[in-house]
Image (cartoon, rainbow, N blue to C red):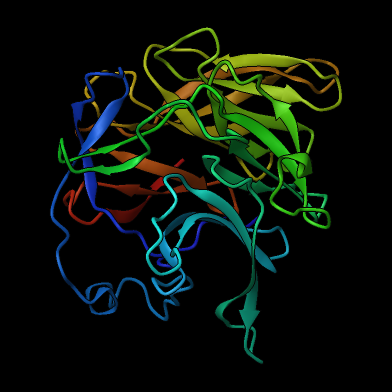
Length: 329
């Protein structure tokens, strides 16, 4: 199982840190700092080498959160397309899939065959490939335009970066052989349009769908598992504050996630051992381990292929440019 994110693979257009709260929401917003002009290839020299940029401003206003397919032939990512001359850019992220282009030696050189798979006007996030069904993907989508009026991103009036938790957000399934970007091409797996559900990922065998939900709680995100065999759903991590961004370990026996349960607008990393019943159904967690305990925003944890370490992004060296760290899991 590969690390599914792509270091320096997509362009990120804003630098921000947790700082102040939106008066209309209990969720933290991010106080933005001015971008520092720099040549990222020079800045990362000796740390990351042979980086290949895959999205560019000629096609996308902004792009991010990209993941490889299990065979590394495609990526799924969220982006805002560059509008035609004189037109306004879309308010919300759309979801895209693209083919990975390689040279004769197998090195990644770019992307081709971009395809938007989300409906026009909808808000979308957290795409993921099914581990055993090559043409099946899932992602969070409002399907139609969300009722929440303020889109995510940099807010000029408050000089902050705002997260978005629209109640219409649900987890949808899409068959890439039939995907045409219409609502009819999407099948809802989890959600009813009354509470935010997103940040999903599958277990390595494809049986369990892991996700974050604000179900029954307007302020805090909790972690749930949906069993595609029994059709049962279990809340497995319920704590004060937001718990989200969960991923299974390569052996499917543990999960990692981030949490702001301390209430200080920072995020800490956690790992938990999963509890199974006699039928192989995930019914909870047996033990939880906190891996970071600091004043930083620790973000996007994911497992190395052997399940021993977590790779993650952190503000430990400054909020203007988050860095990639690794810790023992």
